[in-house]
Image (cartoon, rainbow, N blue to C red; front, side, top):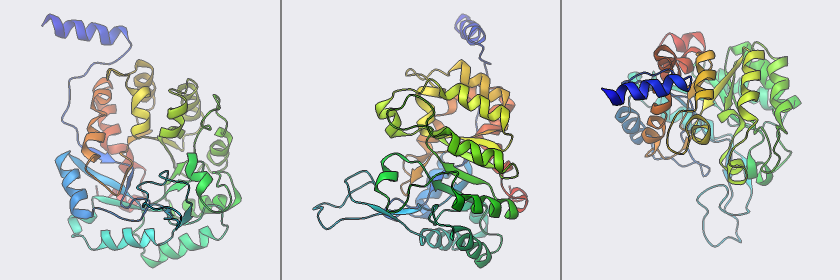
Length: 338
């Protein structure tokens, strides 16, 4: 009893709302069905992982690029950063996702929410390609993304121009997204590996301001594993995210794994009071994502890793972040199938 009171007192002193661990149900807002070689463990493995961890719904997309196995490399790379060979834009990724989802029984199809991603975001033909895909399977696609723009070394090795969230090609895509009422997930790094300031933030902020009718999901709030390899923690991230959420009601944050530590949880797994306060302030604007790529064994562990943070939120906010916020941003027909 004394221990419980001590924990409650500590949480209150930190400005954190205490709630007992809940039996959450989840939506995973960020799953890639294939990896950077367009390979996948398959739907059975995906649903095994979802069912084992109370994941009721999931966003599912392909990977917009394919990693090249260069003839000078004696061993096939396992990841896009495995060697210096390039990557190229790969539109067939959406076909793989569509075929895999459409082959499922109806009850399983209702749990997956496919996003289109197989296009070159520097090509002003991209919106025409997306429109053709939407017309090919009417009502099937429920969002666009994850769109790779600034993305660590992947940007450097991908053939062609550097993609930016505010370029003319993506402006055309955003207009199309508004026309079809589709949310857009953007990977847009907030900074480079070494700059300790929000170097690329304007590239994200321009479309937020210029396309108020588009619901933007910012993948892991512009953070990445590679940024954290060089900079352990971005001190400017929290005030930047808070300012953006206050200024742009069309912005949503994907709390995937690169945000969990060291932002939401400290090294000992304790919730960060300042992030708890921010999420409670904007209870409908955050969602969870595993960001797994083609392999699903870590999916449940990744999503359950957020539970200590969820437990620190107000109970209603925790339920929304765990499951409901992702579903709420989908097009109306998809929301009706929850």
